[in-house]
Image (cartoon, rainbow, N blue to C red):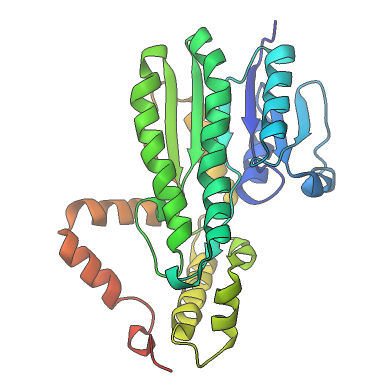
Length: 290
């Protein structure tokens, strides 16, 4: 029988996922680290090698067959997943008008739909054991929306809502469900944000009515991420501590600004909250002007 708890971590080859993997490797767990096939080489570059207690597996989280094959293998050889960390995700930067149906579905598929499918696959074994942890990596974007990040926030809002429902549903089986909500993290991840086809044109075209939206928000986000003291490593430590907590709360701020935004949204009258956030958007007087 498998004596170590089995942790399945998606999107483990870069950023927050990689930082979390490195911390978990120091613990007494059996890790299953996943990434898309074209990203598997990153594990070797980080000196993370496969062993008896660390599996490295390809997984496109949106691929039905790859999800099922992986979970079937874990169930058969290790007795099931004890801790699922849904970390894989992408972010599209775009105003609502510049998102096509294909881009909208891709964003939701990776950040929300695939998470739900992995949860659905691991739950039967967790219910049988009457134990387990499901940890979904959300975002400040899951409790507040910023301009030019509409479909990203939509995917995280959906994840938050479904996870909250799940918290009630599986509590009778002692399955713990948590959302980690990072805000700004000091990393270069903003450089990897995806742009929609129509959004790219607006970014490059100064005559676009949305040009200033993109220009001002991109500069603002880059500045905030460079100034924050929070790093992927500090958020990874929170994730590991959450796994080990006996009774973790449903929502856990992953950074200081996430906690501040949570307090503001909770305590301020909604009308005032939105008025102030709009007023303090970067160079808002320039927005919409060609």
